[in-house]
Length: 460
Image 1 (tube, rainbow, N blue to C red):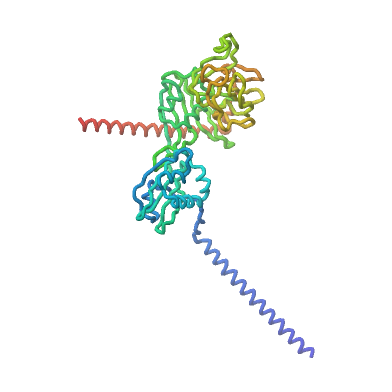
Image 2: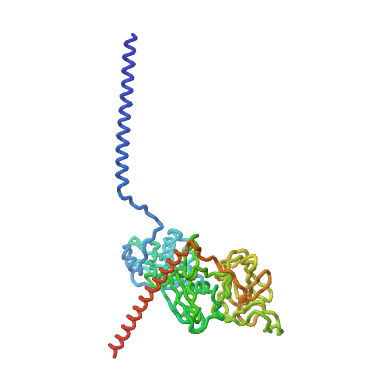
C-alpha cells in the first residue's frame, strides 16, 4: 500500500509540473510576440492626434469658400458694416434675412468653440459679407470678427446652416524707414507711414534721452527698423513686433538703440556700447506738444499776479496721450482742486511725478495699480484752473517739486561685461540686416523710377 501511494503521488506531481511548464512556455511566447509587435509598432509612423482648436487658413471670398466645402451655390455677394448698438442678429434683420434663417445662422455660430462669447463681443464697424438665400440658391455669411480670424457660415444641400472659424493667413515683413523731421517727431513718423503703436513705442524709447521740445530741430532725421505682421488677403498691417533698432540724428549728435534680450531673458534697449536707454524718469511724458511754460516764477495767466510755477506746461490738443514718466505705483487718480483731473505716480522712495488738467484718464489707470514706463495713463485737457488744453507736469523729489529739466537721473542697468561680446555680435547682425534692407529699398526705388520714365516715354 505504501508503494502504490508513492507512485500515485509522484504521478500527480509530474502532471502539475508539466502544466506549469506549459504555462511558462505560453507566457514566454506571448511576451516575445508582444515585444516584437511593440517594436514593430514603435517603428511605424504614428498619426498625429487631431487638435480641435487648430484652424484652417481663411479664403478671400464667400464664393471660393462655398465651392470648397460643396455648399449650396450662391449668387450676388454684398457687404455691410455692423452699426453701433447692433448685434449680428439685428444686422441680418436689417439686410432682410428672414427670421428663421437668422435663428439658424446664430445657432450655428453659437455651437462653435467660444461661439457665444464671439457673438457678444463683435466690434462696431466690422464688415459683414453676405449672400441672401432664394428658392434656387443658398445663403452665406462671412464676418472678420478678429484681426486674424474669419467666420464663414454657409447653407448645405439639405438647407442646414454650418459655420467654421478660419485663421487669416499672415506674413512678417522687416521694414526700414528713414525720415527727415520738419515739425516734430510724431508728425514726421506719421507721414512716413509708421503704425501708431510703433510711433508711441519709439517716442517712449527716445523719451529717456531726448528733450522733444528743445533738442529737436528742423532737418534732424531718424531711422527705424521693425517687423510688420501683414494680412495676406487684404495686405493690411494687422500688428507690429517691438522695434528692433532706432536711431535719431539731432544736429549731428546721433543716438542709436538696439533691442536685446539680456541673460535674464528680459528685453531692453541699449546703445552701441551696451548702455541702457532707460532713465528713472522721462524728461517729457508727451509728444507733439510745445513747452508753453517753464519751471520758476511767472505771472499767473488767471490769477494775474506773480506765482512760483512748480512744473512744466506742455501745450497740446485735447486728447493727446500722456505717458507714465517711469515705472511705479499709481498713488492718486481724480479731481484735485485747481489741478483739475490729476494723476500722481510713486516711482521710488525718492521720486514721484504728477500730471494735471487732464481731459480723462486711461481705463487702466487706477489707484494702487503698478504702471510701466511709457504706458498711456491719461489724455491732455483743460480741467481745473486752466486757460486752454495743456499738460502740467511735475517731478517731486522727497515731497518737494523740482525742475524736471535739471535733475540728474540714474540710468537703467547696462549690459554686463560677461555678456558684452554676445551683445556686440547681436548689434552686428542688426546692422547687417539694416544694410540689406537699404539695398533692397534702393533697388525698389530704381525700379519704380525706371517704370515711371518708361511710361512717360511711351506716352510722349
